[in-house]
Image 1 (cartoon, one colour):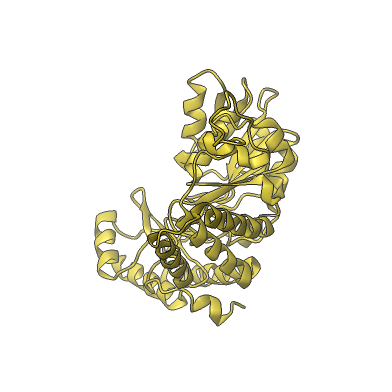
Image 2 (cartoon, one colour):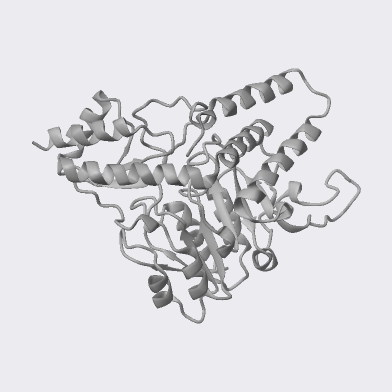
Length: 370
């Protein structure tokens, strides 16, 4: 059970059900942002030391939450930047296999770099088809040496079986976009050779910060050629004619990231760790089960996975009315959700979601459908 210390740390609107788009940060994150900005406003003598301290703090808790070594973790501005770096850094001649209908951040980098001839890209699956081990296996060919999947699908809420996909993939690289699951599903992330996630959604760490974490195989096979000056040794030795890359994930650094964003991210991660990912996941699972019961009671169709093991925080409902009518009604009732296509409502629930809000939403939908 979650502690009051955790739940009381947040203050989002009670009808906010859109964590798959953005996770409102806690008061602690806001305070960390204020404190660090005040430090900078005073003109501290050694901002670099403070930056290093916050980086070590964030990587330390990320290591404990992910299972990857601190030196195998790189902080990044967002998931999209990290995936682009990985696409550039794959070995020449690589063939990447990924879902055709993944979120574009997990499609466009592979497709774009493929136009240069450096790598090839192959898509798999139909719209809303789950990325399962069987689907991956059916599309693996001898030339595929990298597979990229989402831990949780952004449209359906389907939670991939990463250990089983790892087994199918074998010695190939497995890249996992974990932005829709990290911090709220308790799983063994070590199946991934590179784990990537932005901090602004389920981790509730604010905008402009995220991470990628590498296995030894990932570090060995993926080059940091998309790194920049922050990823080399002795960068301020201006008499040098060449620079040696830093070791491990540090070589992927492009520039100094925001000290404030890193400190806020560390605070958000420490709050997750204190609460326990398992406790957060249990609370979210209870919300999803409650929504399933409420959907049955009100006659609203639930489109998301029926198996609890294949779910995370995202639920999909069938809209009973046209989207324009629905959007107006949701706005008037102050519900924050995401609408897809002409008939889909994406509801994303965190541990702090109130079950009364779920009841109110389903009641509203039922009334609209009469």
